[in-house]
Length: 361
Image (cartoon, rainbow, N blue to C red; front, side, top):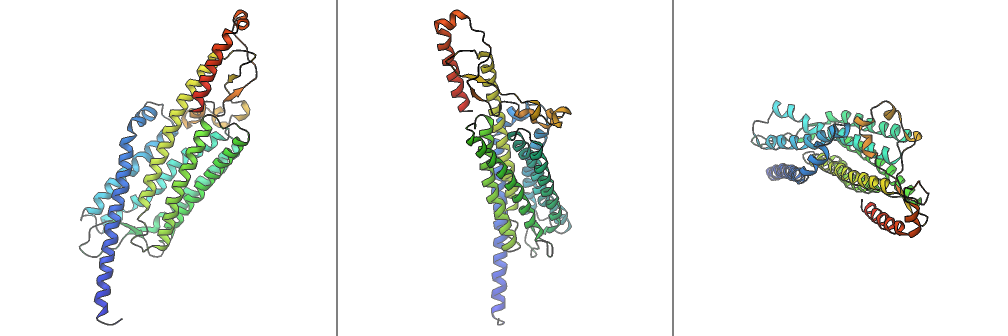
């Protein structure tokens, strides 16, 4: 490179770096606005299904992943535009957006583990396997946190932007690889349960909802985390971490939606199941609704220890695999009504309406 080319190359690098800084600021701002907009949009559901419900482990996790990301984003916005966030101030602050990912992953991971554990009828091996995967993910993420550091900016530039630390910056990509492994294990178990239930023709009730929402969640989060891995590995250092705030925000948004959908459907399902239990009668030519109750074999040490309520497993006490059965049950219908066929007609109408309602749950 000649002496005349050096100033042009330096000016190009200067302009490119400034463009990357502006891109990071706008990307973080857009991600934060999406999260805050969804928070306001679903606030009524939050009050109804979270605030008005009893305190449980899922509720506590909800408040962590629901409000930590937007609070961090708001502070991050000021850090990106306040000239006082330089030097040691930026260095001390930068740990918060970097540790945001492990905090969100820990709180959302508990919800995902409980969901899969529930659709497998509280199988102990599922709980042990997912707990090991979950703890491994969090351990790798905490190990990766020191890989982040403030981006080095020229004098006069304003912004406290996370970047890869020289020497250990590759750890940040490992953080999201760990998230991909954990999410993939959740997805494989969810998909396997879905296939199993379809083969048995019993995809009814909340299981169907959990499987559907879980698959949608996986594909969105997988794409976001895979993009993080590629950016942190291949992109310039000042752009490598641009997508990390969005990953935490979109995970927070989607898991909140998972909880709202489950609790709304659970209330509806419990209402329908209660009506069906009251109205079930023994009529020879009419199928009957049968609420499936868990047997002692499906219970775990969590319930026997009295911790199921706080842990939140009773959220899944609605008949996850409830369905129609032709097995007779005791009847309260008089012989005159049965002989006249009037009871059969009214019960047929009631049972058909309950079946239609359950199919939309």
